[in-house]
Length: 259
Image (tube, rainbow, N blue to C red):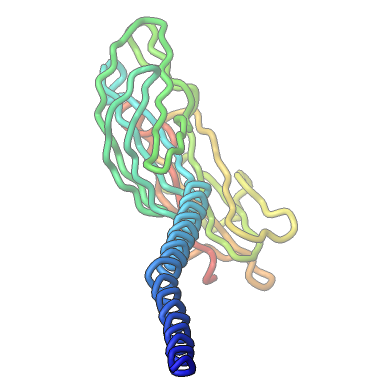
């Protein structure tokens, strides 16, 4: 009888060990493994957030905006802001500042496109300067590329008028000309060059030409092809500067990549 009792005890102890192991495994599956899954999910969310922030930082750094402010006329208390997106990513203008006064905006500008925002009412004070600034949704701010506007003796004044030229380019040699004439003659070698390639240009080319008066202009861009200088397909480009009532600086984009 003692032998039988001892055998039963050993069997019960064996069963208890198995049950304990099963309970431990159950706790492992119901507590520890879900914890690891939650931690893994948290790591994935963190990694995704870091990646999204890196993309946002890259987009923010890629924004390039040129803003030009101008009054509706030489005595107007309203200003328009002409926004040109010269970058590779679209931008959304959410706010316009004129000195310490801000105005809400919601204007999207595609890459290489231009939009006019306004008009914005300003309080005119004699002898006061006004510096417009635009703010994008990504947090960048761009001051007016035409500089400060001045209101003196009842009239608006701007520091300069000009033409800004962007030549889209991979590699090449270029000459850029600006003519102050309505019907220029193109059958002679012009000498009033705004830009001449020094060596070979890689990447896009930007240059500007200041002008003295409003009026009609032509922008001519030529590219060296073999031994000859040839006009780009969209050149010459007509430009009309009307200020006040229009932007003091006009943007011109010419594509030389396929020539």
